[in-house]
Length: 81
Image 1: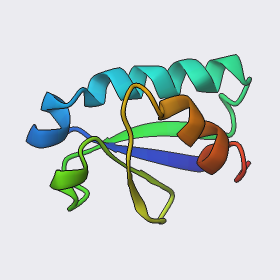
Image 2 (image 1 turned 180 degrees about the vertical axis):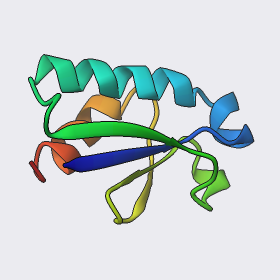
Image 3 (image 1 turned 30 degrees about the vertical axis):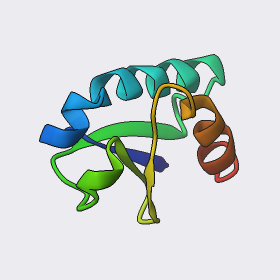
């Protein structure tokens, strides 16, 4: 099971973390990956300047926004599954 951790702390919340969570959930359903990928909220990933901060499994923290969320998903999530 691949886990996508999305920060919902103050900085990330203000930059749209809940929109990113919803987009990830839509992409998971679109790609029929409900049994392989889960999205979890995290209160802080320690990279507030990169908001919205996202980490896949125990990997590196990335900055994700509305314009790059699908590209991020294709590169860092689909590639792991």
